Length: 313
Length: 294
Image (cartoon, rainbow over all chains, first blue to last red; front, side, top):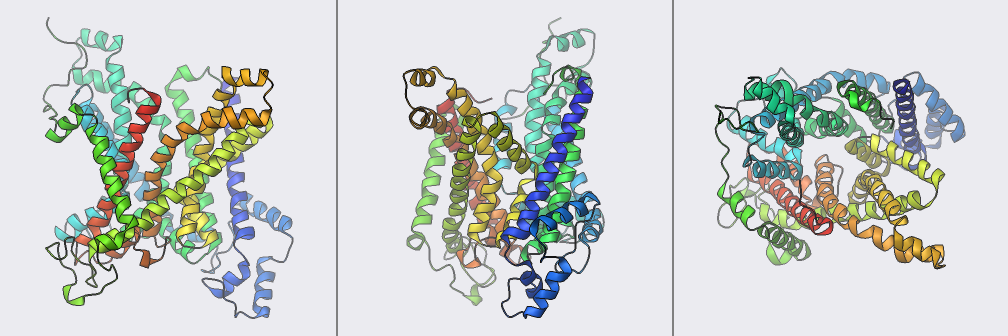
């Protein structure tokens, strides 16, 4: 019973969030940006010289002359069918633009997530229980939190691509061109996750069950990997929302640093050209991804930790 | 059996050694915050009077382009022979303005939002907090892109964009704090003594909600500087002539094969400034909460 209610509540909240994001996007599209027809006609900024006829035709084509509430209804209806509208500048459907560029971005984000998690795991398991590692870790965390990741990317590029020539300077070809972007995107995640995992491991190692396991003759390594780690991973799952946000936002900047094609580049180009349908499209897709994955991970947390199941939110 | 059972490291791993600097910082806990404060004040000084400390950031000297750091150009030069030190110093103002401006805006909006939620009754509370949920569900960078797309590129829109993504965080903390303070004994006493509601809010609730916000705001200034630099790096920030640190890095990105100095020092300026602000923020938190960290 509790589980069904939990799912219903989460699904309702998810729909609410997506609707809210869509409404924000609509407000951005229509109320704040001035005359969209002028933006389309002018290419970039608003050009005053466009003739009235052209503006009228654009208004007709995009339906800007209708009352806002009608446009809002149509906008939501299109969204429900998975249609994000037409780009102002690319003369393509926004969905097409996004789907075309999805591959490289997903490869970048997924690889970075795996790398970030793996590095954190190694660091945490290797250093838990060593008091001296404490100061090292808090210093590392401070460094990662305080260093803009695009600068870390630039430094990596300077050293490994331009000085040592180990990796391509930019582009999308092959795994070699992904190594530095992965690392850049993974490092801030590693910093925070390693700290949290290490805390959890430490706490688990102080529990009575740790003594029991060792008394049964298990090695210290086995205790860490088989027994303590499960406890340490729970707080990591609850940080998944933060991790996901960092990834989705990081992708935009990292793609620019490494001059990679992808959703991030599409978004930045669209913002510069004030191609609002593309921007809102990217934001909406990212929000949906964010909400869906977050809900799934929250559900996973409840599967992993049965203690949470009885607790209503 | 003399085996120590608790928390010993697995065999075969080298011991983690402590750096001398780390040891010095641990033994003298005031040293870190003092250094941070000194550095931060120095950056503020540079931002206030850039001309007193560096030459013209726009002075072009093509003969001396792409120089490595050396006497005369302590931090090297860029593709046009402009002095990196001069550009970094003159960029301090724009970077700090973004960080502080965005945080101040976010704090103002967030505090009003949180107070409304905390004091406005159940319905207002539920509605405003769901709105906060929606804002927080959109990843920060993407929300900022949306705002900049709507408002157009430039310093003020970047500040607004960052503020929009930070304000819900402030609102949540203020709301919780308001609810705690609302039920405190002195507030109940004031109400019982017949102080009017406006008086209770103004004299008792708000002054007790605000101090913890100072810590949150300090932490957010650092993150705002980073966010502002990131958006400038994407070409959405203040005009290039302001030589904001993020836009300096964007400029240097295109000439990495020829010079490393312009790509290193603006980033170092960001990192050191944010580190000093974070250290100060942690110190403030310790003072306010009186608890040991972690």
